[in-house]
Image (tube, rainbow, N blue to C red; front, top):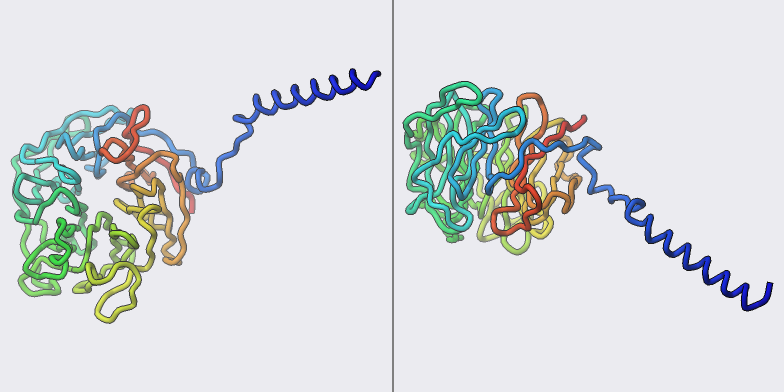
Length: 356
């Protein structure tokens, strides 16, 4: 073979190898470990095409979902099809406000929402079976919670003591988080009817804890320990253990400051990696839905300093996590809220069963 022919053969082989490599590259690309489903469980799609969904709760076996901007409460059937249960008439969506947290207790649906002049909690008698759930006449549980276009908090839940707890943001007024004259920047505790419990830490006050910027996650473990997730400002988002009467520092401190008189978080993260919202406990871990960080964070209860990240940038913004009656963990995406990049069929509810 001549030198010229040999060179041409080498060049031709190089071109063919390059083309083969380009053709197989997409199939050979493996997702990094943090993009896999939690504990190798595959996520299933429960529902699609939701409109700025915010909170998930269950009435028996029936899932109920709030939509922030439409003010709709919808129920889902076994195929994920949505039916409108009600539209909450007094809701005034604005910025981060609208129809927010839901909770079910003693055949009542409780809802935290934004009106033109305040944030408030109402409850509605529940009736009907799956596919025909209805709401009765609303009853005001608590009104007059300060409102703003952001930092409205909005998560509600019933503790193991049977009391109703609500997370309230500082409504854009940081100083109010340290003022007992305001309900802003607090976690509130009340009876199911909206009265102030006699054993609250501050006599005659709904305030259970103070010094919060914008808490949006609330959950209890089997021992009765209460946890809350919180949006920081520029430095640190937080996971806190909530104690009656404790002060969590905002706006004086943010994150782990080690200052006397304030309770430090058990974990903190940069806001770009977090923005923690709803959370749930399942399979021995706390699972936190993160918005800006676009990930599901797992924190083992037996080591609150540890953290594992799942689904990083895989499904976009995550708003809420809830435990379904069958033991599956449901996660709510939030890409249609004005800050995300909606994909096809967003927003969704995803489901998986975490292994122990």
